[in-house]
Length: 459
Ligand code: GDP
Ligand code: IMO
Ligand code: MG
Image (tube, rainbow, N blue to C red; front, top):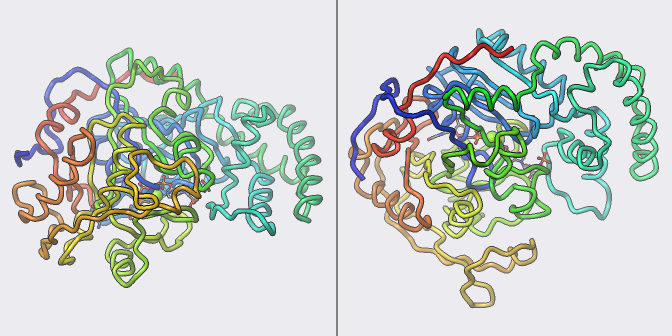
């Protein structure tokens, strides 16, 4: 690896390509920051999964934005944002977020689009989720209480409301009346929940629908046209590989396809149009909510990482559980997502440590295992094997050139890359600000160096 530095604004004239940014761990890897940095070279950024359970933090010149539903790309004037069909959209949360962005001077009108096929989250989804999470005898997942799971249940049960239906007043009224009757009965019978008033809900959501209407598009058509026109399009993952409904630590997962496979179904862009997958991993590991976490650190060192890394949920404020970098999981994530590039974030958080353990393998009953367990019980049996690397005990905050990192920090990154199963380091993040970023030269040539086209006006 060499430290050739490529300026953010430098653009070579390469063929337009698409890129997927995914979380390689349990979410909160710093995807928001990375999408923001890279969006300088993309015309469109699209979300494909999850909802406002996501909290993507972007800090620009000291100003903090936490995006939940809106793709981070909208923070740049010449970048359009798309909320794809795979997202579950809470209309009130969306309008709130758009309002906050507008107040902060961000352009959202005319460059932010919502899929007409996205599913809608309604208040009874939250009611059912809260009741189920707190019901005696249920496995508590530690969700974000946003109604995400029940909304995806209704989608798959073919009884959900889509954005296109939200805009049809008659259909909306009928849907709300029928759904409230059913959900109130279920809520009362199973959890003794307070009933929800359908009339009030209709009044509130029909008003919200009018405000959302200008953003609604056939976003699959929009994205495919942008790609056909040669515009660079980025897909912004939410959550992380280990929270994926199929590939994560089930049942301690979210309810959508957070992995790169979710892009195709969640946007209507075919797999053949996806050219790059970039996995984002912290230099260590965190998880918020319940569920297995093999490399978790319970002692004062965990607390030290939490403090230094400010590891508190962007959405819920909950303290994040902290642990060491887990290489078996990183290799698993690279396999599932097809990531060929890795972005390592929060390197600076390790600056003060004299020694840094890294989980290099798993054993169960003393025997090495090469596959990741499919069940939570299997995860609980894991005995992680660690290799301890020397710390660098020097500040890396804000370093933008790989060669300027302390030698031991470079060794740490090279060790990570060498054990990642073939992926290469693309970028290293040394602080939360845009500029606190190292670009590796090969990546810069391949991904950053692309022409941003003006693009056709979305109709
Ligand atoms: P996301 O959900 O993957 O976008 O990540 P979050 O925004 O939930 O959490 C990442 C947190 O780490 C945010 O508070 C970021 O501002 C912060 N962050 C991102 N990169 C770095 C970094 O390199 N160093 C430090 N110290 N903080 C970072
Ligand atoms: P970003 O995009 C971290 C976790 C919750 C819980 C589980 C299920 O910011 O990385 P849900 O409300 O989705 O049904 O909760 O998933 N979770 C996240 N953890 N980052 C996220 O998003 C998360 N989104 C959901 O804490 O354990
Ligand atoms: Mg987050």
